[in-house]
Amino acid sequence: MRHPFRIHVRGLDTSVGSDGRASVYAAIRSLLSRRSPRGCAQGGCGLCAVRLIAGEVVLLGPMSASKLAVGGPDPARVLACRIASASDLVIELGESLLRLSGRPVGASDIEKQ
Ligand code: FES
Image (tube, rainbow, N blue to C red; front, side, top):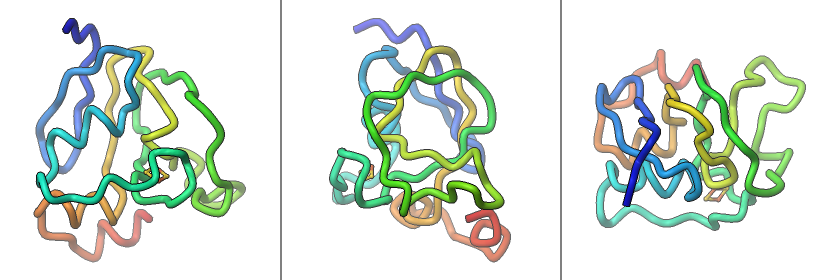
């Protein structure tokens, strides 16, 4: 399968390919523990929240406003299961995904949420 785009995950200092059709969450799940929960994959649970630092995305469907900081201090917070890459991306994992990644979560990570 061709992966024309790269998703760089800031903080993990790694990247993963994206075909531009599957969700960003599907791509980054390959970086997480095999035992990590899948989440709802429908924009409702908030497990897959990330910050979009750079790049263009297309929306795959609606996102639960209650899981986003809509109108809050972080408008870049999006649900990775509801977006696909339209270019190379730079993202930061939300707290839930950071914990699943096995990377130690520090106070500065939590402040970003
Ligand atoms: S996996 Fe539930 S909102 Fe994305």
